[in-house]
Length: 142
Image (cartoon, rainbow, N blue to C red; front, top):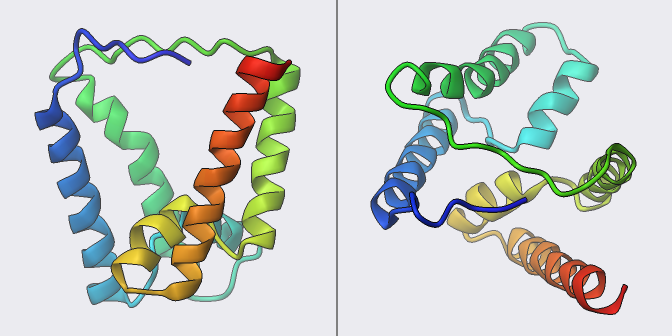
């Protein structure tokens, strides 16, 4: 995957971060829920009565946001430099990791660290270290 550095601005990144922060804060304060994507989607796979609506709305918002954004400007091109096999294995490994880690980077990294959760701090450090090591091994040793 590559980033179009010619169109990257710190202002759009800051705006995106502020929007994510506001969204997770509102979900926590108004609904008492953590905005961890793996937990939200996992709850859709094992639905509990009365718990389905907000999860569907959250996932629908994730899908709708780029479609609405496209009304104002062109979406940046996405280029993934991996084959389907690699993407499938990577997705399965991420899914297994989120089960073992009791959450994903959005749940631990955004929501957990902002609540000063020691477990989330450790999980996020381990997520990042695993990512750094994976990139190093794939790009420099294989």
